[in-house]
Length: 270
Image (cartoon, rainbow, N blue to C red; front, top):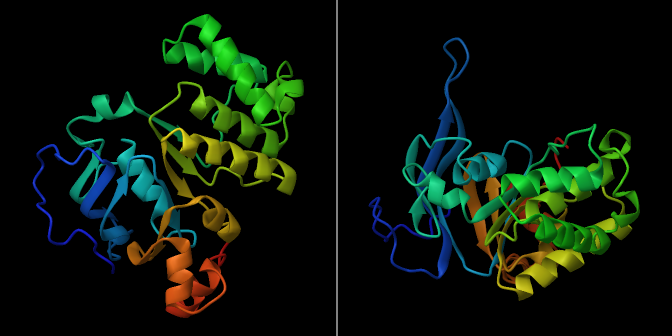
């Protein structure tokens, strides 16, 4: 297990270094095993930080602990042990503050199928208490940038899986969050639309937004991420800028880094 914060104070006080968007210290999440079986160690003592304006990738096979980590950071799950901070706020005791600055694009789009694409955007924009004019302006801008503008008035029950994914990403961006969590955001997109998403996320990076990205697409992580943490069985087994990891292990890409360390493909089980 890679522990980059082992010498830092693990208290629950708000951190002082405001260059960190995320700070995790010895984080664990165990799920009770069925009928006498051992507990499932979904996240098993990980520590890392993400600086403001950084695009940070979590890579690994299904079940590696990526989504569980995001679910803790966004308040869906409570940790078993350890601490996690978002912009200096403790995710267990200060989640209300955390939710004011984050947004999430989940693995499974949560849309209202009897609303149009634009109708869904208006609905979620209203939940953020955004002005109606701002919702329309921002929504139409994102619809154009991500290639969904022509379908904006269609009911989402008729959307393809890729279109639903694009709309889910747009909704996660509607409130212009400081910190964005993207859980497999381009699954189901064709190469052309995937590239549109990449270009847009690169523009968000230029605006100093922090992005936490999980992906199975190695080329996506290499194209977008400043640093990545490779997870396996709930632990971080390698961390750093993609090029540095590739050079360190003398291989061609991050997929080969993972295979060299674990003897398995990062795409195993997909």
